[in-house]
Image 1 (tube, one colour):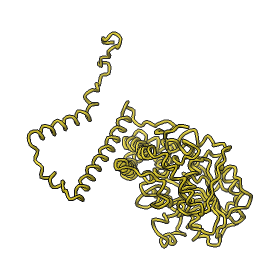
Image 2: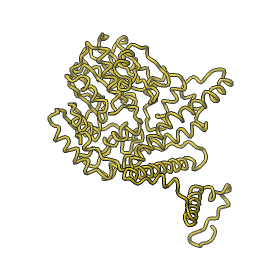
Image 3: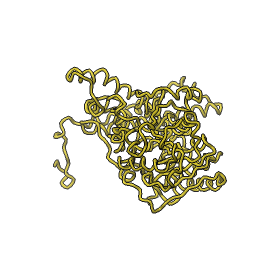
Image 4: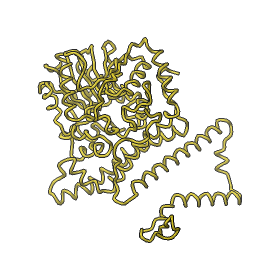
Length: 401
Length: 110
């Protein structure tokens, strides 16, 4: 058995079937039922509104108000909430009956892989913010911080094992497509940057951290999160993959790193889980720790102002119904302003929508590097027919290239 | 620290239907479908495993003709399943006031 599988508990036949069902249900809701939802809007709701108001709904909240009482929306939403719960419910029993064995196997895996050179430093004194503890974000039971002992990796394992069910394959084989896409974008688009030190903020279990160390093998890669249980798993996983990363328990709003010390500061699916004040504090910290000419690059959900009214409504569903309280506030921001108020100059702003690197391959990806940004139903959404990740950030002081 | 993994998420659970019970009903239907999918998968795997061991029960299943006893068993099985799945229809009255509530102390209609 490979080291990276040694601490992964195996579902039995029925558990595997339940996972497969939850995966199929997720896919069904997000493709077939989402399609029905869109048809209902296009064929009835939008024409009805236009007939009485003389114009189409102007924004997401207006569409939301109109759709709320429509039967397809009720069934889509209720089924989606259930599917979200069934994702985790399909994984928990497997973990529950293997907890002690899993933690022992993880400890073994770390001992066997010490030569890899990655590290883990936890800070027991850290104050985990209320934004992380008040609700379980995206309805994950136990959230990021649940733990059964000081050695427990099961909360990270729950996140890891549920990712396959949740994303029904749309995050790539190792759930690392976002990291692979952004790291390879930086490599191909800005070859002169050649980063020596890279920081991933809000890394959770490090799915999208490892690609940076793999894409830039000479670079020193650091990754931080406020939650210890997911970091323990992240460290175990990185070591077992043979990829050296330095994981630290730290708050991105208060970085314990020197000024001008990183070439790249990265985050993925992170900002939308933060209160606005924390987003601003993180951006200012990113500016501080970046070297002159360094790049801040965040993979995120696209801003509402750039999306049509329906797409805004569709993406903001999570804010209302999936325990993502800060999601819409973030998407309502002007992302360029977030950068400039943190110290970046306006013309150093970078914004791009990218095809998925591990899906399309290097050649097609390279061809798409200079394509104009696209804001449509495939932007920032898990669509088997073709997803485009949205990325924004800025160079410090000067524009790269 | 609890020894068990939590099974529900902190935070409120949204509701989408005006009519009482529809949200719960949908959850039940989906859980039932999940159970059915699990059972079907097991049945499928059973047939494949037997076939790999040289016992092809799939053909025998197709050719199977139930005798009188088996027919009666299968009839009963279908009836039980229908009664179970449709239970909510036969016990729900449109007029809630018409439901008699028995007082546990007096054993009489409350």
